[in-house]
Image (tube, rainbow, N blue to C red; front, top):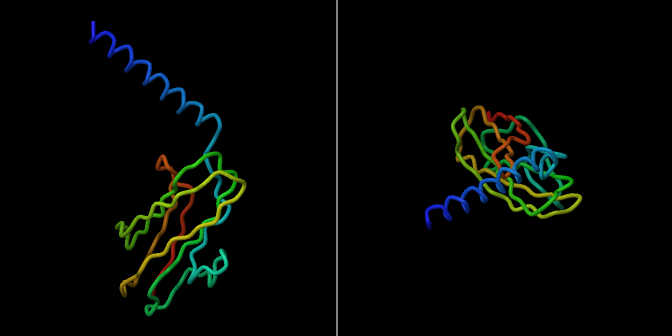
Amino acid sequence: MKHIARCAILTAVLALLAGAAAAQAVAGPMVKLARFVVCAGVENREPVGAADTFPAATEKVFVFVELKEIAADTEVAVVWYHNDSETGRTTLAVRPGARWRTHAYKTLHNRTGAWRVELLDAGGAKLGDASFTVE
């Protein structure tokens, strides 16, 4: 009898999760990406020194993120790649509203070459990406 009750509860939970996923798919993403800028810094909540090439002496590179139409509390992940190997991941909290600006940075540790940074939503879907070079 307990086994049947557990199966019924599990089935109900799975049905709720499937319904929530379907509703999300119909409603669209929880957030919309407005801007995703690789830059030398962030001042007054705006990107400074946007570029796709940085000198080898650069200590940190920033990525500025502006999101719009945030439906609910969520998170985004900024994932950094150097020569196609993941070198870091930062999770950023995002609150509901019409607009949300945030940023993350990567300390380069004198690593030159090709870099890529991606922005992922809470479900792991890519919202945006950008490439840059450190020479």
